[in-house]
Image (cartoon, rainbow, N blue to C red):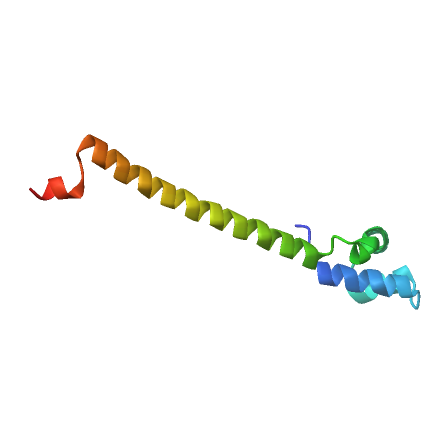
Amino acid sequence: MPKKRHSASFKAKVALAALKGEKTLAELSSIFGVHPNQISRWKREFLEGASEVFSKGSSRDRESELQRELDEAHRQLGQTRVELEWLKKKADAILGTSKKSDRR
């Protein structure tokens, strides 16, 4: 039987329910259809990753950093294209293969 894959939101929901402590692991296992050991594992992972929510490197900060990097890459690409076109024109002029001589 293949392993069932659960979404991150489902795992968080189950972990939060376990953290509330209103129901036992056996009850949660029955409700969510997940083995109690799996619930304990998700609860532990949830707690280990909780500090990331409040860290300086939040996903919003990371997004803006990635956007800056993308903008810089686009700028460099544009500059490289301009330089390439300039070099092509110079090479054509030196080699005498300009478009004007092709028309003759």
